[in-house]
Amino acid sequence: MELDLDKNPESRSKANNAPTVVGIIKEENDNRVALVPGSVPQLKKAGLEVLVENEAGVGAHYDNSSYEKQGAEIVARDEVFKKSNVIVSVKKPDAKTLTKLHAGQIFIGLLQPQINTELIETLRQKSITAISLDSINRRLSRAQTMDVLSSQANIAGYKAVLVAADTYGRYFPMMITAAGTAKPAGVLVLGAGVAGLQAMGTAKRLGALVFGYDVRPETKAEITSVGAKFVDLGEVSGSGEGGYARALTPEELARQQEALNAHISRQDIIITTAQVPGKKPPLLVTEEALQLLKPGSVIVDIAASDLGGNVAFSKPNETVVTKNGVRIVGAANLPSAMPASASDAFSGNLSSLLIYITKDGVCGIDTEDEIQRDIVICHQGEIVNKTIADLVNEKRGQL
Ligand code: NAD
Image (cartoon, rainbow, N blue to C red; front, side, top):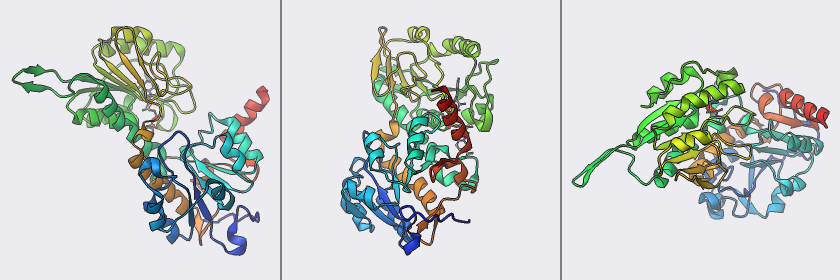
């Protein structure tokens, strides 16, 4: 790979042969940390230096000494920003973090550039090189070790079932006791991507009767392979590009909602995971459907976000109880609720990427590279990702 070692001394330490310094910052409102101590030795082996903000790992149960033992240095937050060529984070930079970043620095995190176009424009203006891990092309086999979307969705799907089981007032499996027989819980999972399939498999292992549905008919084989029964709504089909779903038209969505109601009414637990890249999540469990559920039913909405979720009334990070006693858990950030495993996986993905872009101890950007051309969003004062550049220009035109 040909590295683009630009002459900017702040972004490239190559000029004086100094290794690239990678700085790990502490997340706001998230228990995860972008790199865990276990990743430090391989980064050092690649020639990188690692700085860690004081207590950056405590939310994920990694204390300062665990990083120091692996050869990282603990410093104050301001020092991380001052001394690092690359800042790594799980989440996008907030307003305070943005003021600390300086021209030529590389910022790596989950930026959701299709939604956060204003943030991307700010990063461009500040001449920050922005790398968005969620823009990775997951279909490239070389990029699979860097696929944070899958690693975090896998955790979300697993944890959603545990949250549902904990919130539900009955057993998941059939239970035959001297006091009588308890029926197994009926679990319906909507959306059969990475999170949905993991949720189906986990609910099955807990002994529930599991049903799975996705708007992409090709998911049938995957749903049955994890032990769930495929819910066939016949006419509604929404396969889009690259294995993702497309957004349904309002008419299609209304037909889908109606067809789903009959299935929803029979369940005790519903886990919703449906997403369409860059769009508002589709509403799958309507107000009408909620009324069909029994008191004590539980819905865990993984798609809950500020844009809306898959369930009427669901609110991110809140549990809403309907008048008929259905609990809707707005599970907006389940990976943060399982921070050690989520951070281990995130760190594995991120260190693969860091090592991939490192040569002789120096991180370099090559916007022609097959992997980097999707994830490098801004570089040297330009939005280099064509799709995002078009989106930002479109937004500018609307102002
Ligand atoms: P996602 O988070 O984008 O969406 C979750 C699921 O919601 C998807 O299966 C989608 O079809 C479904 N959905 C969207 N609108 C819906 C609606 N109206 N009703 C019902 N379901 C709806 O999905 P993901 O987990 O990111 O996976 C997306 C695709 O990427 C899948 O095809 C998956 O197999 C593929 N993938 C490929 C790789 C790889 O090749 N290495 C890795 C991970 C994922």
